Image (cartoon, rainbow, N blue to C red; front, side):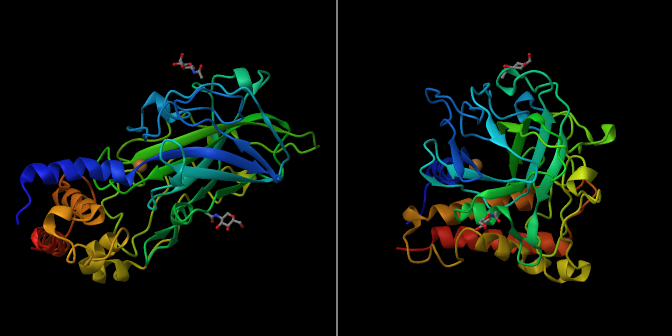
Length: 343
Ligand SMILES: *[C@@H]1O[C@H](CO)[C@@H](O)[C@H](O)[C@H]1NC(C)=O
Ligand SMILES: *[C@@H]1O[C@H](CO)[C@@H](O)[C@H](O)[C@H]1NC(C)=O
Ligand SMILES: [Cu+2]
């Protein structure tokens, strides 16, 4: 039995639904848990600025890059101290009833001062932000990102700089999901802003003027860490977008995470597509089901592989080698064959 083209197209659109999106459902600090409002729901007082929808912010210069889709001011402020550890509980689905759905791409944390305005009334759209943390690949060769732990149910953890000066701040935790970043504009941005008051202390730490950026403003759609044709290439290095982590927050100003061994990335190119597929299902997953019941994983994998295979490398500086393109095409044909197999 053959799958009509229309059903493939329908399954493709289902694919982006199945792969899903999400939001920060909770902020946990010092044993206290602050719940956020589900996107678009009737708001109750919270420290987390509510967004209108779980969908990603698309486009590096989108005004919603500031604090998420149509982010609203929040009524409350969490009381914290310099050096505290904050846990962000990212959940999937519009009610947060499933795990965060993505595992590819960095997580970055920025802060901005609300100055003399209470953060509950502070509009951050023109604010200057500094970066306090960024996590990316934890193992380049197996293509494992810190974000994968969040997909498995862990919170994303951020430690406030130990010398952070007291005051009112917005802390902006951002996941950039890069599963479609092989195409320009494919990156999905998920920023989330929470209002905090950093307790009195005699600390005076803060960023320098040149570490401050506007958001949007700090990213472009063609930054190497946002448009990334090598995203599924084991051993490839990753370059974080935006400014370096502020020096007072322990930044090394290099902006680059784990870098793979260059020779490994060349010899591994042939298996890159297989490894990418492995992230969401096994190669044989569709062989036991009939073609018309092709697993969402195999369809999503096919969709990703098509994006990879057809991405235009000519206008950018990182060419896809013939060998790699051939291996991508081979994988593409295999995936189509798998989808069509059965009964
Ligand atoms: C902040 O100001 C911008 C620009 O005027 C506006 O579009 C946005 O809705 C404001 N945000 C909040 C949370 O009031
Ligand atoms: C956050 O901390 C918890 C508790 O230590 C840990 O289990 C979890 O893996 C951490 N999250 C990430 C993304 O590393
Ligand atoms: Cu998503």
